[in-house]
Length: 171
Image (cartoon, rainbow, N blue to C red; front, side, top):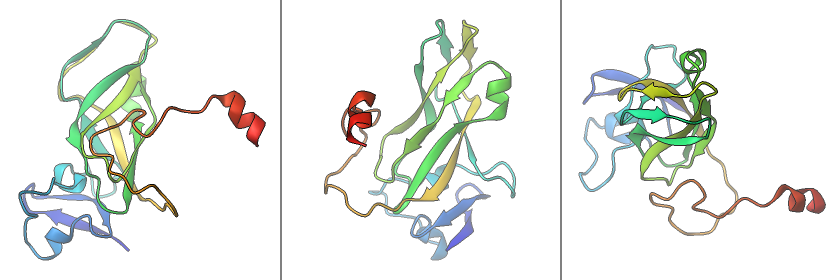
């Protein structure tokens, strides 16, 4: 079900694509201009054995407190039909005192991908173009869902988290 595809526009291999993510490559045709470019065409893996796609910061960001900060990355949704993404920090980010918090990006997200970061050693400046995170694509399987579009909403766009107290009482 998964296979690597050669991105003609970038001239490099992208991470193995699932289902219809890269159908345009199979026919050597570009997707219509009206459709957003799937994520696998925007980014490429660092090596042929890489599991994740490295993503860079879209802007220079300075973190001046120990608080969690939202940082825009150089990638946009959509991910691709039937796919989701696990966003993880690169090991080099952690070694440099930057904590990249884990995130999930759904298939129907169409906006700029952002990550949440913090540092125990402020201030830290992250220059534009720094590869701080990686995206791991995986097939998403949801049995039932509301028929509504997410578009570019994120970080709580599908509702606020339930307090832990309610979760413990209902289990």
